[in-house]
Amino acid sequence: MEFKDLWDLESAMQVLMHKTVDSKLWAEAVEWLLHFGPPEIQQLLLDASETAMHNAFPDLKPSHYTHDGQPCYDIDALAKSLGVDKSAVIEILKQKEQEKKDAKVWSDLTKGTKQTIH
Image (cartoon, rainbow, N blue to C red; front, side):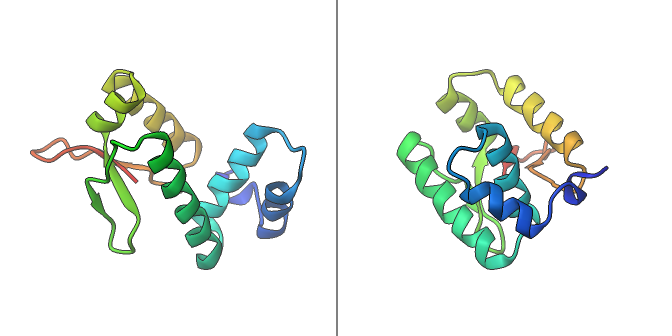
């Protein structure tokens, strides 16, 4: 079963609002909403994510933004902020993308441009 078919709006929102839900399940519901939820929910979650990213990593700045305003981060800068190798970040992103076939989370732009995460 594909990632997009594992959730629907009602079940994802129930998990999101539950007070004692497992953190992994909560994160999966948020991820589904970010990719497949209604635009207004996506925007709320993206705004919260950007605020959390800025608070946790104040020196990490978006390298650019998508056409719809989502921040993109340079993978080298992200790895440095996290204190891990770039290869570890890329491996995690590849794994997430394989698990969630319909959800493109990074750009493998190795021909003269930097790799970024969306």
